[in-house]
Length: 193
Ligand code: B4P
Image 1 (cartoon, helix red, strand yellow):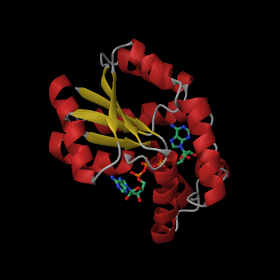
Image 2 (cartoon, helix red, strand yellow):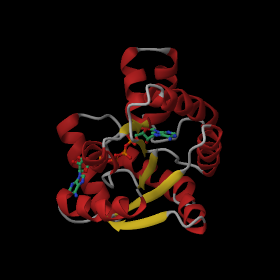
Image 3 (cartoon, protein in one colour):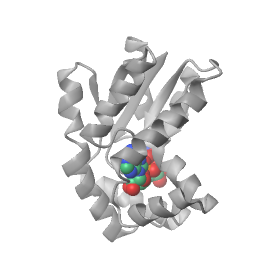
Image 4 (cartoon, protein in one colour):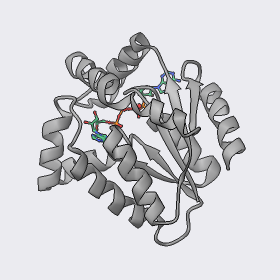
């Protein structure tokens, strides 16, 4: 199976590009942000807990995220109908990165590529403020966006070094039209698939 991690700061276009990827390469999509928002909307205890972190721009604790991820991965792959999986928004910390490698290894799988979308901060803030106006997403306000960016720089971006050492990191210019960026990502996927 083709396991791809799509990586980047909040607003870098992970969700947007994942939609194109699942269509072209017939992959299953695991967006941890979407999973958590669905839990929140269902009113479950897990959803309430998740919302208490998301609304402050913080990450949900690793132990919880790792369990959720493993169960969603098994659900999406158990029928054997998918050619692979896009991990969108996971891992977001070094322990999540280690847990992902372990979980895949236990299932005889590995990550083929980590595609990192590079976008400067000014553009990230503009995109997220605009999305907040259109979608009403509660974490897309200036104060929470700033907190999410801090979390990204401190807790998430160190993963790039890990994947670079493993020879799996592909840095993609994340500025341009959605189609231009998708063409850059496709070049990488065609190389590793
Ligand atoms: P996510 O749902 O993953 O959201 P995101 O990182 O903010 O957005 P993304 O990068 O997908 O941006 P998009 O394509 O939509 O996370 C939300 C929260 O969930 C986190 O803060 C955290 O609390 C929690 N969480 C999630 N995963 C977790 C984990 N593993 N561990 C712990 N907590 C976790 O693009 C943004 C906007 O830009 C859109 O409006 C889009 O239309 C626009 N856009 C995209 N590409 C563009 C382009 N090329 N040009 C112009 N605009 C563009």
